[in-house]
Length: 245
Length: 245
DNA sequence: CGGTTGCTTGAGATCCATCAATAGGAGTGG
DNA sequence: CCACTCCTATTGATGGATCTCAAGCAACCG
Image (cartoon, rainbow over all chains, first blue to last red; front, side, top):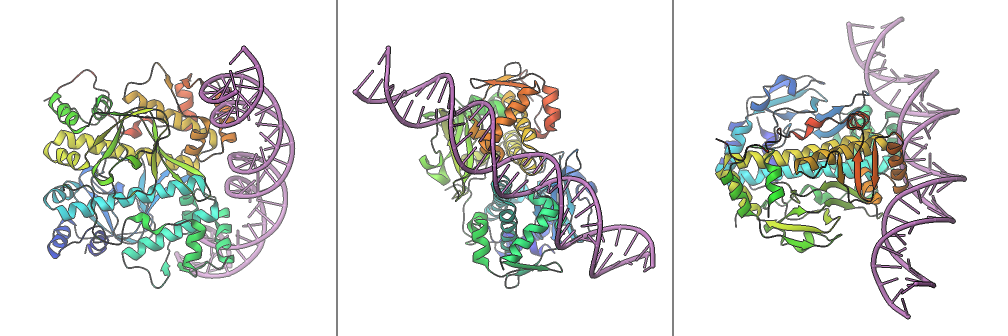
């Protein structure tokens, strides 16, 4: 089921039952995919867009030196590429971080639906906007925040995004990434990432054990990260992306 | 006139004369704006989208510490926000780097045009795709490239983008940014940026004087930067043809 | 069990930031 | 025209943040 996808989009516009039906019909039945599987590789590119329904994935780039930079973390409900932006070739990869459930969407059908239905259009643009927003915030981290601040910011972001799809339990959520994944997301070495984690632990802000992360002081960690929860443009569902007046 | 904008979009789809007319009509007459002027501040946000017709600008964020991170450089022909993605509030700023000519576009009209005209739709999506692509490449630089590599990569990118709007003269172009701007783009201090410039100069790759940058060894600088010119997804320049189909 | 994977710690090297000072150019006002 | 200031580029010196290399340890697994 496209559950997660629809639940997330509902934060971008007030979807009616029939809107949700339309969305459901755009999504193929999910398929199980093991951890560490390339998603583009399995797909007829311009015609199918993977949609993550369960599990985590990431968009990343491998440099010639072998270094990896993770560009974005994909959570349940996320499209591999946001609405409408599927190019005919991609210069980076998308792979699962954990075992996952992956469905397919026809990009053309998505666009058609957004032309036929203003509410869907708004929701899809909101989703695209959020992806861009998250990536820009990520750039700020990489350029101007210290290691611990970057880590704190990422944890705040994941916490907020997981909340949108109902995967947070009273300030604790499962964070299935290994330290090397986190390091490659934040542009750090694994050694230094490890020390940054200890930093946050030492400040009493988090604990992270057996893939469960819990935040002990939400205000504190947000302050350290200078995290502004409004940047996802989420919350109140009514929002316009420039729809005709 | 919307010259630059149209010229750039022509790299994303083969625009006919009438397509270009449609675009022209979407663009208000330009206004002169001095250097270092906030562009959002002057605009009724959800209803008007600034379009840079001449001069340079940047999208940036100021942190609480006072540090600045420049997220993207805007060149002639660039929209302040790519097609369709104008949120009703923005958590970063856009300001001119030089004196500039700025027009306004109605985002709603842009989207309407893209629904009525498949070629325009394709061109506008291409432009959005390119913005995302540039920003992702920027993330790779910030996360995983050394100072000199970052600088080299930025110069390669600007060179290629300026070529798309006909502002390169045989490997030299005017680069009106001061060193502090470059540093804030690349996540470096100005001192270190200065030394990175000397690095590239010392390698005989560039000269940069009086705001004119010339690349002496395009292959060399691209190799140092691991710059892949295909990442802009640009069509081979179609200066030859003004009409198609 | 031996091998692998992931986490942790220590030590030293490197990259880059910060601080401080100089110098040239551009504008400004007297 | 000169004195002044501001802005920008440059250079040196020092310190700090982060990387790399290396080793140890625990958990898991065939």
